[in-house]
Length: 309
Length: 260
Image (cartoon, rainbow over all chains, first blue to last red; front, side, top):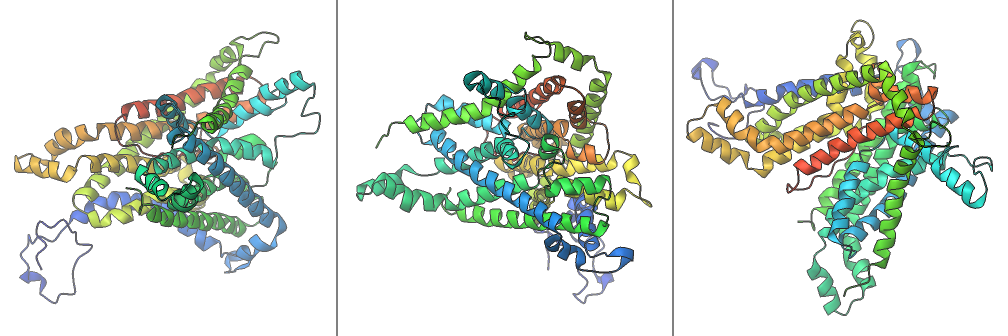
């Protein structure tokens, strides 16, 4: 079975073919090409897969090295852990849906909404920048915007004479953090939706009109079904984007909001849960949720590729 | 059927407001250190702090190390997969997407539990930090390089060079690299932007860096943190704008942001 000059690689030594090793010519084209990816795979093993595997294994570790399912059960049974997950899921879902909605409208406006081309280029460039703008500086930007001495706070006070913070409004809560997260959520939606909207062909619209369809018909029966996988996939991606966020939440609210990444961060800095196994179980929960997110995203991308060429 | 783009303008306006109000606010806030007038006092204070330069320098160092490691890991691998191991592509792609599945805070947790305590107390060195950053940069670097390799049909070019008698060194230097220049620069600047603004790894691994420094002065002072934030935006923006400028005309790539 000669594989000479074939781009297809052997994945390992073949020992099951029954021929004596000495019968092979010493320089037989046994392919060593797979060696080329070994450094990369070793790196991934050491710094990505082993740490993940360690989290997985230690999730089942009880006090004194026993094996237990209690840590995983605690996620659902202990109220503060359950609430952390609930809050993280809620804020991710809220900002994903909000980001997807406004991002879609903005993407629509700059692609097929009839705006000048310069606006489109500017907005897409700016979205590329804004989707990368997160973490500590983003948190401080919003403190400067809606905090106690923020610009918007003072403008509202100047306009209607009410200090919104003295009136009991706080930004360091669920909705405040949602507004901050939206800043990196909806540019991402714009970036992903814009090419998808560009991919809607004019012929489809014309075909709909020739058959007597209205704009509503076009969107209801043609455009939205075609865009649905992209819409769904991107919303899910935004969900994961918010779910894994740590720096922004930490810098913005400190430990006011009991989000899962914040709890895991606190667990790293000192065993705040008084149970190392539970910390691992929380981390495992995050990995599982993110894995689901990526699975759905991957599936929706394959669906979307049917129409987008 | 041409419709009036009134709604488009309205959505655009809302978007522009949402984008720019926080930026304008931050800039305005950073200029208000002296009561009653706008000055650059906060910037003067920020730039006078020796720790500013120290932490900035550390982040630069981490960025350079990360870029080197990331390039060494990704470029040969992507090239090799494209050229010789096309069957491996899904698996390598899967690995490069793993950082989206394992968030930074979770990866730090795993790294510290595995390597941060005896017998392997690796966190006295920056190894874990650089490894974490390299993992974080993997998706961006790989996509960038892979897109660059696909765009030019690197296999045909390599075979052409081989049939003209070029050795591997010549192929890499004169064929692969010039064709990948845009892709490599994109990957490099994106990694740079990610590392310069990164907070999670540096903070939780207790390593000096620019992100934790901004957070720290945020807890100590008013106005200066916003001034430093403006500096930090400018770095991120400069990098991203540069990427878009370098990559103009190339097929658009979506970049999913790194350091949340």
